[in-house]
Image 1 (cartoon, protein in one colour):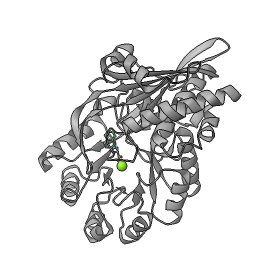
Image 2: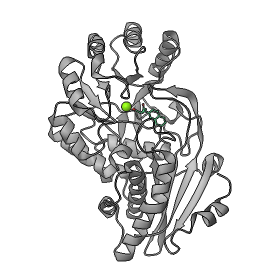
Image 3: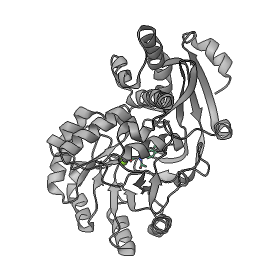
Image 4: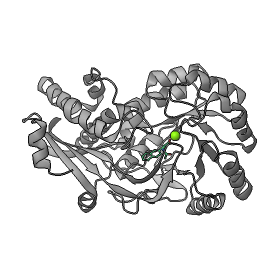
Length: 391
Ligand code: NPQ
Ligand code: MG
């Protein structure tokens, strides 16, 4: 496969409702799409990738503008340079950019686009390529922090009526035991878990132990991203299984967290670990260790959602993921919408991601576009911005 050009498309999409977590309230999503224009023996395809970085440094140290700049200045030129030596493959991508440190979400987006192009040319689906053993996956939903318990119970009731099979509540100091108790009292023994997004410290252990009374599936990332030792100490003091999200940035980090008793369960997000191929490796090592995994969500569009369903189809994904219907976050998605059917989401069966962005939707939500061509290496910033016009 030869990459002729790469487009970096920034979209702006309103969320159906504000989404409040311990680190922010989001009302819009700014997906950064990577479009690889590739060809082989005269056949041309577009491969699509999605970068899950947020606009601000609130979930991780990567953010939208950093990802776009690292793709423009380092990662895409590295692909162009590599293909001057030998044909580019998705399998070889991670190694070919190993010298560019960090920026896993940016790398994941380009690897995803290369993988999609390769698979479309080969007529193979993402699910097949990653090793999915099912045609659909159970769907959980992430429920933000609300202004009142009544409002929260209203939302949870709606999601259960829609068929979601597992509820995840966002928590933070001052909004934890009470909402969990209220949901348990109202809805009984539904599959229920919480996500703190690093909002607590070990000093809160006695308070967090109060959650043990509610038979939660897990507690997700209560402590800091780098606090593996503390999570292991907290895990020994709580009955609720410890699940890590932000901390698991690589296969080594996953192995380390498991061996140190800091993770009984792992939330796998391809963007956070550098791509879907690395995500499969973490799935494999967790399965080896008898550690259940589930697929986390980053408010992806239908492109990232298609790839996540394929990943969640692997046998070690034994817990429902945050793979919700498109309508959970977007009134209009950029692909055909993903819908809930009996609490499950179907894995697209077509070649590659099995979904394409709808041109009208791309047009509607497009905010900024940048094209990098293999023949013409990136031109100086001034020229480029003059062409791209006001962002
Ligand atoms: C998590 N995801 O599991 C993240 C947190 C999160 C579904 O809870 C824009 C983009 C807003 C990504 C807010 C879910 C976001 C975001 C929260 C991710 O920790
Ligand atoms: Mg999380």
